[in-house]
Length: 364
Image 1 (spheres, rainbow, N blue to C red):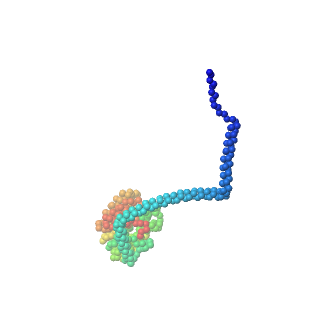
Image 2 (cartoon, rainbow, N blue to C red):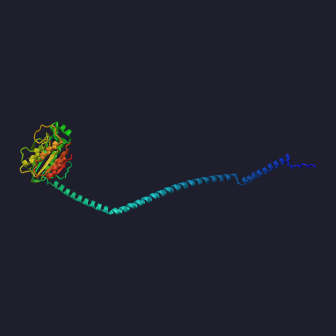
Image 3 (spheres, rainbow, N blue to C red):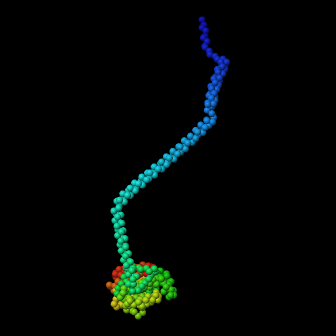
């Protein structure tokens, strides 16, 4: 017998059921929203709008204060860092000062010794100052046989030895005494005689003789010769004679005659130094005023040019005329280009026991 197929269970929902469910869901959603709106309305009724605005303003103000506080904190932190750095620098400086103090304490003995030495030097300078003042007072008191006043009443204290019983002064009156520079010597050599006599260098040499004569000791004797290519006494008729230093008329006449001598021609030093042996008795002090090495060894020469070595050889030849035991003091008026002169004359002064002076432009 045939069996009947069993029919499966079926579930079905009608359209009406769906509508009912959807409508119910809408009602439920409406009820929820209505409830929230009611709560907000009730809250608005509890807190007025003005208070809410005030609260918001205060909230914004507090936020601003918070921001300002944060910025201030940052600035304080920066200042704190700066202060910390300064403290570190001060600590380093303090350590350096401590080290310097320790070093100073170590060196204090040496410093005290240097201070004592300086005090001793000051005492020595004060003694020398007193000696200079005494010497100056003596010079002003009239001990000199003849007065001389330079620019500003200057009194030069040098190692120049003006003393002696018989003093011989030899002054160069060659053309080179017209100026210190060669080009000016050539230019002045062709000028009129009155302009030659006004040459600064020659007038300085004459003033130097004037100063020297003011330093002559009492009861001494003197003689002054000028030399270029020839040698002659400044006062005519006194060749080979000694003049008393107390003869003021002869002293003045010597300076007047020197001022009338015109520098010209070459330099014959051999004949000039030969005068030392011709004077009887011989001088015990020779003062030589010169500006360079000789250019000839006799009164006349046919040479137009001469080298530096040849001039030095002429000087060595002239130097043999100086007898031993007589000091020769040199007053050198430097001339451009004559480099060997200062060495040669310094050696001459050293060898004879005299002194050497390189004259400045403002002496005496």
